[in-house]
Length: 124
View 1: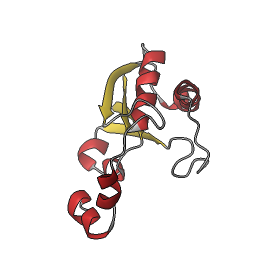
View 2: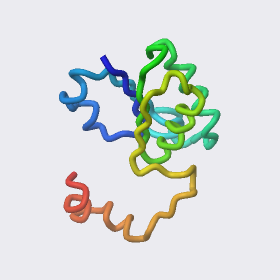
View 3: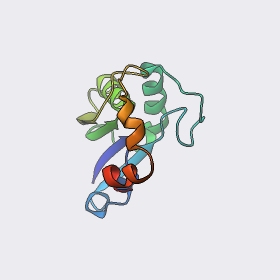
């Protein structure tokens, strides 16, 4: 069975049986978001990466797991791949940012996230 560590992901991936039937998923909330210390974000990529590796080390095989990161989770996933060069065999980045507050948000983004626009663009 393959192992895939997921950061800042779409919940639909966790329920996708085409993935879960052959892959063990380890989903992690980024500190300061979701249900982990909400509002108190840790902005150190290296610090978060080391904490995450320590927390999940007992759940992963010694070699041969993949790391997926989306948004700022991509920076953390890349850092983990750099720290655990023997363990991480695949690195998958989706719309990754360079770091906290370094990405540009366009004014249209706020409009798209509202009401009918949200339904149209995001399908939610």
